Image 1 (cartoon, rainbow, N blue to C red):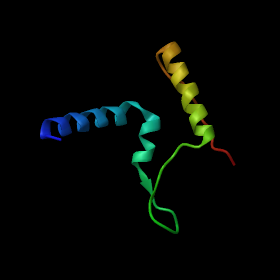
Image 2: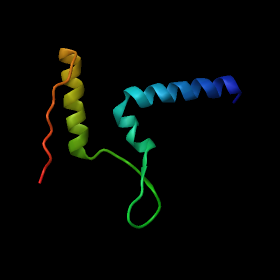
Image 3: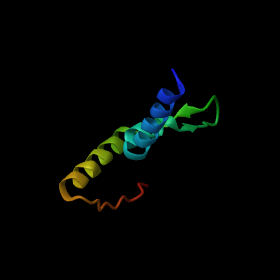
Image 4: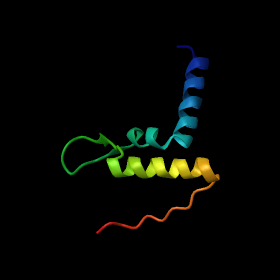
Length: 71
C-alpha cells in the first residue's frame, strides 16, 4: 500500500471514529484486573439505547436523553 492509500485509509478511519459510535469502543482497550487488555464492547442494553438515540436524532434532528445510573 502506498502512502496515499494509507493516508486515505487513516482519514476514513478517523471520520468513522467520530461518527460511528458502535465502531469506536472496540478500538479502545480496557485492562481487566487479570489478563491482557481487551476491546471495549457495547452490551445489549447499550446497543438498544444507542439505537433509540440514533432514531430520535434522525426523527427530530437532536437528542434529548436522560440516563439514570442503575443501582
